[in-house]
Length: 284
Image (cartoon, rainbow, N blue to C red; front, side, top):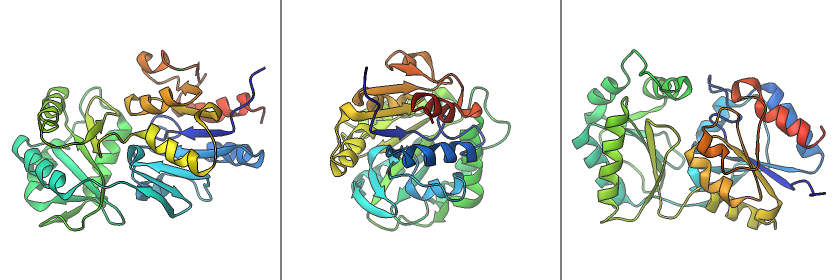
C-alpha cells in the first residue's frame, strides 16, 4: 500500500479559492486538521504574497507559501527566497504593452502593484462592462478590484525588485497577439511566462515556475518530490503537477490538466472540492 504524502501544495484560484475569490472556513478547518496530523500544507499560487491575506478566512495558517508562480517563497512572513525581474525587462515590457494597449499590473516586492498614469485610459477601456463572454468571474472581479482599490497609479516605476508582471486582455485575439510579442522579445531578453486563463499571461524570471519554487521550499524542509501531493486546475499549475509524485486536478480543471494527474477531485472549487478530497484521502 502506498504511503500518504508528507506534504500538500495547494493552488489558490480555481482550487481552494471559489469563483468569488474566497477560501471557505470549511477549507481552512480541513487544512488545520491536516496539519494537526503532522502533514505539511503549503500554498503554491500565481498571486503575490500581499494578495493572499485578503482572500482567506481569519486565522488561516499554512506551513509556507510559494507565490508569484515560483518567484518567491515565505514561511510565515519571513522570506525564504525571492527572484526579481530586471529593471531593463520591466521598462521594455511597459513600453511594449503601451504600444499594443495591453492591460498590465507590475508587482514590486513590499509595495502596491504599479501601473503608470499615462496608460490609465486604455486600461479602463479593457475593464469596461459587460464582462467578456468566457472570462471567469473571479478574474473579472479581481481586475475590477485592482482598478478601483489596489493599483498604485504612478508617474514612473519606483523600486528595483519586482515579483511579476500580470497582463490581461478582454479578447483572446488581443492576448494571443501579446503572447506573440513576448515570444519575439524573448529573442533579446531572458524571461519566462505562465498562463492561468485564456485572457492573461504573467511574466517571471527565466526558468522560474511553481515547480522550481516548490523545489526550493521542500529543500528547506528536507523533503523530496516523491513525498509531495499538489492540487491545481490550470496551465500555470502544469510544472507543479508534473514535478510532484501525487498530482491531483480539480473537477473544474480542463481535460488536458486532468490527463496528466493521478486523481481528480469529486467536487469543484465552488463546492469545497479540496476540502472534501483531503478529508477523504487522509481520513480526517
